[in-house]
Image 1 (cartoon, rainbow over the protein chains, first blue to last red):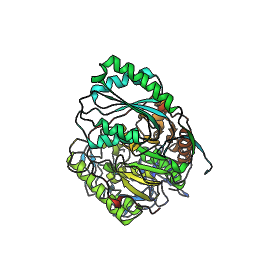
Image 2 (tube, rainbow over the protein chains, first blue to last red):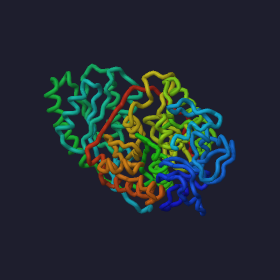
Image 3 (cartoon, each protein chain N blue to C red):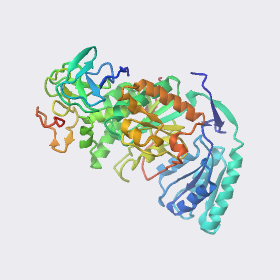
Image 4 (spheres, rainbow over the protein chains, first blue to last red):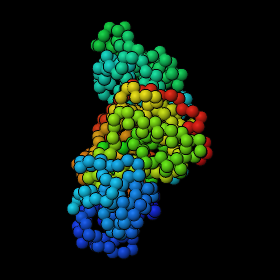
Length: 113
Length: 402
C-alpha cells in the first residue's frame, strides 16, 4: 500500500488507484495538486469523497485501495467528483434516502452541490 | 527488530501469555451477580469477569469458554455455577485442569447462597492469585504473538486512515511471523475476488468463496442491508467500496487459513475468522455487538486486539487488551482519553497510513511488554457470549504454504 504524504487535500491510497480521497473540504475553483500537476476543481468536495486522478472512460472500473469498487456510468474528467451520479456498484445498487440509484446517468446523486 | 523481547508468562501447555489473569466465570445468568461481586470485591485489575448467560447447553459456548479459560493470558479460573443449569461445567473444569491451570468451581446451591459463595469465592481468588504469582517468566518473540483486528462504529474516514494503518501493522507483524486474525465475513461482499487471489492455496480460495456465499445468504435471510445512506454522505458510493474499507485492515499478506471461533491457528501468518454461523439462521445475528467478536478472537488465542473506529467506541475486553485506533480526527478530540492512536492525523496530512501502522506496531509491542492500553487503564473488561452453531473446519481451510 504505497502512498503519498503531503499537506495536500487529496490522498492517494494505492499506486494503481484512479481516484484520490479528499481529506479536507475543497471549494469550487480551488486549485489542488494531482500527482505532479495543479488542477482546478469545479465542484465542492467533502472529506471522505472521491476525485478522479486521471480521465476515466465510461464503463471503466474505479480503483480504490488498488481494487475495483465499481464502474463509471459516463466519462469522468480528471479532478471531477466521483460518486453516485457517475459511478455504480458492480454488485448491488446502493440505497440512498431518495431510493435506489439508477443505472443510467442522472444528477440526483450530486447531493453536495 | 528480531531482538525485541517480551517478558511473558510460561504456561505449562507450552503457550506464552502477556498478562497473568484470574478469570471468574458465571455459567448461567443466575450466577452472574455472585461472580461479579467476587470480581468487584477482589479489587484487582487482573481478576476478570467472564460468563455465559444461557441455561440451555450450547456446544459453541462451551468451546469459546474453554478457549478463553485456557488462553495464555489466563493463569487460573474460578467457575460460579448455580447448580441446575445446562452448561457442562465438568467438561470445562477438565479442559482447564488438563491445560495445567488451577481451577476451582463453586455451586451456589451447594454453598448456601449468595453471601457464603461470595465469601468463599473471594478466598479462592486470593489462593489462585498466590498460586499464579509463581508462574515462571520466559522470553517471548514477536513470532509468538497472536493479534486480532475488528472495526466498530465505522464512518467515511475508517477505510482511509485507521484501517489501512492497521493493514500496514498486520503486514509488518506477519513479516515477523506473528499470527494475525481478521474477521468481517458478513461485510466482505465485493472483496471475494481480491481475497481469493490472496489465498495461499487453491483449496483455501474455494473455502473462502463458500464462506462469503454463506455470509451473503445468512444476511439476506436476516433481512440485513449493509449499505446505509449515511455511508453515501460520508463519501462511500458502493457496497464493495464499503467492504474494502473494512477489509483493508487485513493488509496485503497472503491468507494462510480460514478458522472458526475457538480454533487456534497452527502457526504464524494471516487468518480469516468466519464468524457467520453454519446452517440456517437459528439464534439471530452472527454477532450482536463488537465485544462478541472480540471474545471469539480471544478464544482463537489473540493476545491483544486492534480496534479501529471512526464514530468512536470505548470498549475493552476481559482477558486480552484492546488497542483503539481512531480514524476520525474530530472523534479523537472528543474521546481522546479512550483512544490509543490518532489515525485521523492522516487526513490532516501529518502522517501516512504506513507511519500510523508503525506507531500501532510499536504500541502492540509495548502493550505486549506490559504497558496498559487506554481501555485497560479505564477498567474496561467487557465480555459477551451468546448462542451459535458451527460445523468444524475441514483440512482445506488451513494451508501451510507461506
